[in-house]
Amino acid sequence: MNPIGVTERTELQRLPERGSRDPEIIHAVLDAAFLAHVGFVSDRQPFVIPTLYGRDGDTLYLHGSAASRTLGVVERGIATCITVTIVDGLVLARSAFHHSINYRSVVAFGTAHAISEPARKTRALRVISEHLLAGRWNDVRGPTRQELAATSVLEFSIEEASVKIRRGPPKDDEEDYARSTWAGVVPLSVAARPPVPDPRLAAGTELPAYLSTVRDTWINASMNP
Amino acid sequence: MNPIGVTERTELQRLPERGSRDPEIIHAVLDAAFLAHVGFVSDRQPFVIPTLYGRDGDTLYLHGSAASRTLGVVERGIATCITVTIVDGLVLARSAFHHSINYRSVVAFGTAHAISEPARKTRALRVISEHLLAGRWNDVRGPTRQELAATSVLEFSIEEASVKIRRGPPKDDEEDYARSTWAGVVPLSVAARPPVPDPRLAAGTELPAYLSTVRDTWINASMNP
Image (cartoon, rainbow over all chains, first blue to last red; front, side):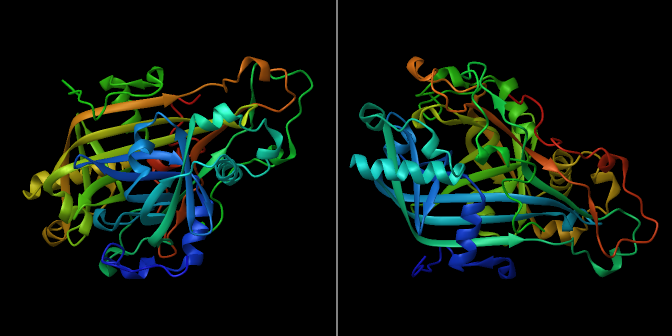
């Protein structure tokens, strides 16, 4: 992210020790997740839509059906906010007030534009696919011309972004530490269970190497509390 | 949710077989998750902020620091969109085009209002706390008058909501089923690992019963593919 602008949109207002605009940290959080929530405004109404994404430098790629309302509105180059959140744990304090969660969250602002050129579209789809599951793209049938035409692909250039991270144990008021209430962290992560073959899998098809390593804490184990 | 309005905001435009406005399904998805992404508009700029929530009927409760920008803007009664997404699996098809994810997602529209009366505020905080971890509230020191004053609590009445669900194996083009590409689903869920005690835990404090049952697939095991 070079250089990231800073306006009041990302000025860190609360608990600034949890916040940063460090591009390396922002990239690391974006790379550790795969689901974004995209916010945009249509007729004054805010919409928040979940979507997969891929990252290449300071560009995020999104895709969906060409008929989707989300992409139809967003690709007109309107102001967009993309937020990515990873929950790392429940923070259980001795007081209700100091309960929290450990998390990593990026809020990015920018505008999205449709990619129309087929080769660039295919390249962007590959970025999204490899972001989700590295190694998969070369294993599958690539998109046909018709499939490409039916797919909207958006390029979102991050103009400005911030990241917030909370980690570690609860922070209680000094006088509460003597309480006998259990306090600590319940670590959470996204876990993958063993892959379930399609009932119509062709006989003799083996699990590829990039899936054989799938195991618990596969998705967001890095940077955990 | 009775009755849920239906305007073009929640009219299901794509793949309507995945969508529903059934209040029972909407409630079930809202109850299976604990993190929402809240969208609102400030000076024409969309913002999407992650936050915890609790549900009581068709009301969602949110909370945060009274100094937080999010809540300060949202509590003015402006149009708000709250989206909750649970990812249940990666859907790996034989063609790039038919890749997808299994998920459950609720998009809810409404307006939020600040709760000022201390007893109602405390009750709403209890709803959020019990939503996150049932049994916790009675175990902790409740909020003081000063802590309540420092906490913004918002009440969001769902005016309109829809839920989308995708589950099951990939759907490939008929001619692709003969391919030897591995296809199927990688099930994903949020998993809790064993609770980590606070380094300053009072001697002899035992793990409460509501935490001893924490285990893998604790959070969103229900309704999995």
